[in-house]
Length: 119
Image 1 (cartoon, helix red, strand yellow):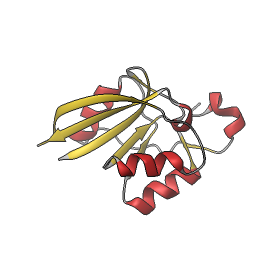
Image 2 (cartoon, helix red, strand yellow; image 1 turned 60 degrees about the horizontal axis):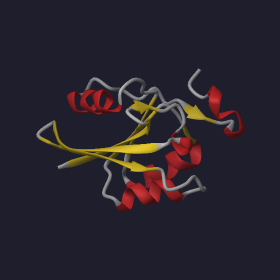
Image 3 (tube, helix red, strand yellow; image 1 turned 180 degrees about the vertical axis):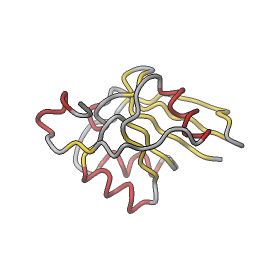
């Protein structure tokens, strides 16, 4: 069983991890999604979300972009970070399972300009 979280705005991958509306959580067995749920973002504060998702048992996080601090915490927890994703959250998760979704390493450095991430 693998658990994939996708930082989203409803059903679409969002550009900025910390400011997403919700996380679409997909559970997969044998590279097929068997369960999905959406949870609201419980709030953006430094270091909180990576630990929150780790406590939920997430193995992979997919987002358009993400700050370096969050990436470091995910790496410490052994959670794979995939950045530069776009489109539908479920399609991104399915592409990850097929091995066709690769991280572009789109790190957000300017948090006050989060609308410009990934451009």
